[in-house]
Length: 342
View 1 (cartoon, rainbow, N blue to C red):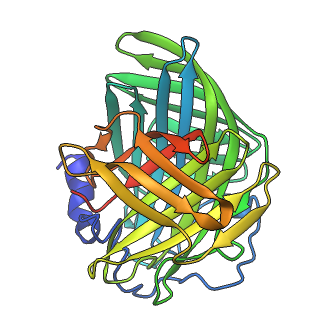
View 2: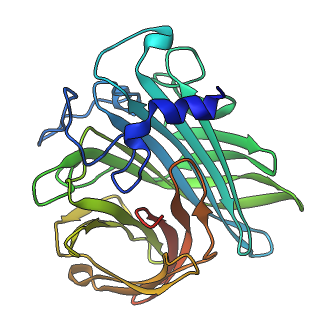
């Protein structure tokens, strides 16, 4: 059995993104559950939290070449636990999945890596920080990072420098996801400057831009009636930023949350109902690729549009992920992730 088949066989509960990685809408079954008023400790919390069922290190970047061509970049490492018990070697219950992608205005390159924990194929250490799966790696001290990934049809080598503080979503990093109270621990570094080289079929491309790194972990962040999410990370030309998500429910309603981020890193959290995200147009797969996004409390009334409508992540757990433009009350760029549409 190859590695991919083994991973899928061991992860059957996480095979449908409608419930998310590791069954995000199922019971926690002995795993730890996030609690209000978290007390984060760094650098330790940059590392893995094996007592929780699902966790990710999730980086997206808006890039531009010297000729003005826009590019998007993704590097993601997911950790999923089969059981709350510890183990060593092949008995370790940790499973790892890595996704890397490069998006151009007319192409979308995707690669996936799958691994078992405990045998050196993948993992995360906090100090010094290193997240890796096979030869893909994200390393550094969270002030500066180096990020690499490679696949048959693309590769990249990027340097990142933080130009602002960490941002904590929800109430001090406790991010509520449903009316029933499901939640995650969630913080970001949205102030990375990034530069490096994309290796594409047409040749190497030097790029610069900005990057957004999300850290999140939980054991049951979705309610049973939630089927997926639409997540926006928007960077406006005036220096403000906004994170917002819309969680889709089986009753046709949505649960929303947002964080307003000023240029100096001050935050304002917004609870359910403050953010409104309405699809305006879909691609050939029926996935929304143009949105009307409103956060009236901050005067936001914008259209968010995909740079490449076909940025579908055809991975073991499929979803849409790609760079976007922002027009309207605020101009800018950002990233959009959508699940539950497969």
